[in-house]
Length: 329
Image (cartoon, rainbow, N blue to C red; front, side, top):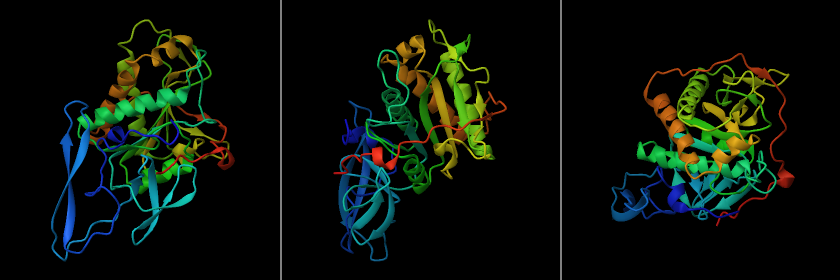
């Protein structure tokens, strides 16, 4: 899947520019895009029309691009028709074509990706990176149904470094970012799911987002039968700080965007892993996350599940020498 993408999924609900490519337009014309529902896929496609443009009208500068191959990348600077973008592995590359992105409500971060950063792996061989992406794609579809614009930090099985994911969320001025994960190693046998949500230190908005993600996920899981759950003794919503007192996880520490990381369950628990491998599961999880996001954006609800927090030093994310960029097209 490396370097591939399904444009119909990537563009769903995203705040895209009113033109199909990054081009320098003649001074007396403009291009306008209209979202048209596709009745067979429930996605949106862009149709383009051209008409006269008053000489005083200027188009806004895009904040990020979806490359021709479907890879979202933040824009670092623009000179004429050429954009310099930050690739998923953190390299600067020139890009003259792509779908421009403006302000976006939600950034969805499917954790891990690529050959070396697989995340947790179930006994069956199912990698966490694939489950995270399936949930993320389902979540984007459901947010679109609610009229909430979103983009993904990765759209296929390729690596993306943590600081690039954070930079993308900040670049598109997102109202929130949700990082989707599934946990390991096993906790203890539990009557209730071991969902954990990690939030930003000293951020009331991150805490509220985390509380809502936890509350709605637990509500959704309460309707599932036949799952032998596992949980850590302190499962819930918490900060995780390193010994220096900073947010331990880079995807929490780096962005200015209000962000929460959710560990939806345990890949290392065989009964949970079987659930995660089903076709229905991504929509069960995504429906809970979509409800939480909708509540965050439209209400003053605070959520539930708050705990005292942990001190922990996680392993670093994928390094530059193990990160291979996807083809941008």
